[in-house]
Length: 381
Image 1: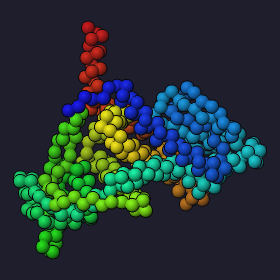
Image 2 (image 1 turned 135 degrees about the horizontal axis):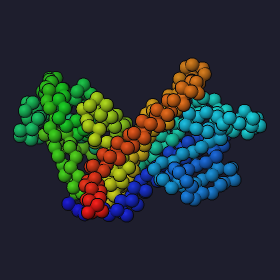
Image 3 (image 1 turned 60 degrees about the vertical axis):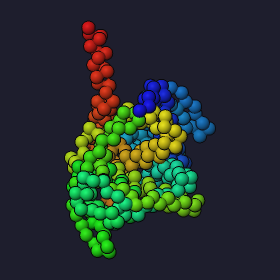
Image 4 (image 1 turned 90 degrees about the vertical axis):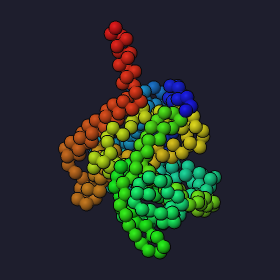
């Protein structure tokens, strides 16, 4: 086990992950707004009081807030979370009003809102393209090459040479697809469809739970069924093929994220496993300590995560805005301002509650509660 990265090292790693990703997310909104002629009043990295900023020739204030856990672009005419126009909006000159967010047709507003998460996905795809070109793409057939004695696979009667075609009804194309499916479902009972000697068969097994201790002392629970691949197939990837490979890999990661959220919602996975900024900071420091490749791959994962989370249909997130635009398109008029206001209040309360919960999870997972308790006892004593 190597030494855990220090506090300053972890902070620097966290800033290098979150800062650029928040910037490109907001830059996506900003560039889409410029494309449609919308004036941006503010472009902020971080929230709260301004620490530093400059105003460009277009009148946009580019600034840094003291709390660097996010950012925003404030467009002219977009005055609050529910995108209601400023009360003085109607009094603006016609030319100036035409440059406001609210003056644009609904499809343009939807593109501007969606541009942030899409930019995060594009960043991740670009990184994964680089990895595919540099290292190739694993496309190992889902054929069992070995079986660990006493494992769930052995108990279920699986044999070497069996080809897995589906798990819990989900088609399996490669050995890597099978690994991704199994590792996030420890303890879960699944139907395994396979082919043996050209004959289709099926068995039910319970995925085993393996606690794997890494270099930094983390002990995640990983699903295992006790099989090994026949032979790894690493396929070289050309520049032309790379986008398709990266998009496919991004889709696989998104599916895993959706599966994990579904497990939490259904109660099959504890909410205590959700992590927040402190966990991201810890992982950022660890991955940077492991080397450039690990750190850059983490940036791709976090970028996909940011895009995914922001597209959830929760008011105050980009997905919440898109939901209301979809309703507006169907109704041919927006929801009443009061309905939007209450929805965004509820969304904000939910997001804040989630932040509090994941922060408590982080404090417990990282052992900070004990450290705080020791320090408090020392102060009291």
